[in-house]
Length: 437
Ligand SMILES: [Ca+2]
Image (cartoon, rainbow, N blue to C red):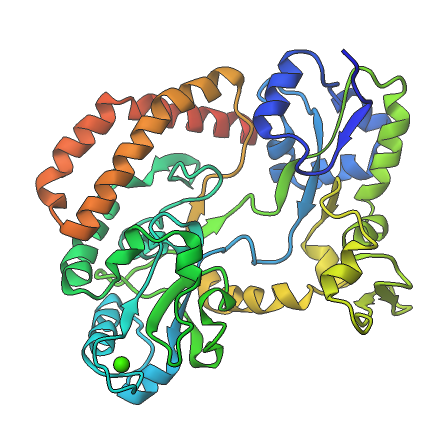
C-alpha cells in the first residue's frame, strides 16, 4: 500500500479511523519521540492532563498531535437562552429567576398580545428543537439535578466526582419530565413543533414584521434574533422547585485529538516531529490560527498583539483564511488569550454571557471526548444505540403527552434489560483509564 508520510489537519481522520489504523499498524506511535524531539509538546502534556487524556489511545500510546483552542467559555458552555426584553417591559415583568417565575412569564406571553400586532394568538412563549444540542431543553433539566448532555456523542453521560452517570435514568430527570409536562407543555407554554422542526426551520423562525418568540435556546442571539435582535437579552439559568439549579459544562471543549498523524512510511519521523513541535510554541501557533504578524496581526511591541483592520472590500474570514492554516496541530490555552492576544469579537460576547450568567451554576460536567477501544466501540454501537433511541423516544412522549410517573419503573427495568449497566461501565472504565494516567 502506498502511504503518505503523514496526514495533517484536525478533521483528516475520525477517532474511529485513528483506533482502527493504529490497530492495523499503519500509524506510528509518537510517544517514544516526544521526550527527545518535542520540548513544546512535552510541556503541553505535562501541564494539561486533559489534553494527555484526549490524545492517549486505549492501548496507552499517542498516535496523533492535537488541535487545542481554549477560546474562553464559548465552547465550554455552548447552550444559552435568550428572552424578549420588550415583551417583559410591556407586561411590567422581570426576567424569571425561578421556574415558577418562568411559568408566570410564559403564561403572560401566551395570553396577551405582547408583540402588539392586534393578534393575541401569534406569540410562541418558548421554542426549542428536540435533542438539538444548544437548541434543546437539556439545560432546563439542571433545575432538577443534572443538565442533560447532548455533546461529545449524544450519549447523555455526565461525570460527578469521578462517577459516570446516565442522566436519563436519574430521579432528577424523572422529576424534570413530570414538571415540564405538568407546568409547561400541557399548558401550551413550550412549542410542540419543537419535536419535529429541523435546524433550518428552527433558525428561520422569528423573522416576521414583529417578533413572535418569547424565549429561545441557541448558541448565540443571532441564531433566532437576527431580525429583532435588539429585543432580546440573555436569560440566566433559573432555580428549580427545590431552590437549586445546574447548567452543563463541556470540560473537553477545545480539544480535537487529531491534528497530525504519521504513518510507518515516514523515513525520518523525528524531523517531521521537530517541525510540528514548533506549532506548540505560542508565537507560531498564533500565526497558524489568526494570521501573520505584520499582515493579520499587529505587534504591539510589549509582547502583546492585536488584530489588524480587515481591508476594505473583504470579509474578516476572507482576510483570515487567505493567510492561515487553521485547525492545525497546535495548542492555545487560556494564558495565551489572557497575555498575548484577546479573543476575536465573535467569541467575546458569548464568553461574557457565560462568565456572568452561566459559569456560576455550570456544575454539571459533561462526559469528555475520549478515544474508545475497537471492542468498546463495537459494544457501544450494539447496545448504546438501542438504549439511546428508547430513552429519547420516551422523553419525547413524556414531555409532549405526560405519563412519566406511570411508566418510570417499567422504563428503568427495560433500560437495565437492554444493558445500561454494561453501557455505563464502558464509559466509566474508559474515563478511569484516561484520567488515572
Ligand atoms: Ca400578537
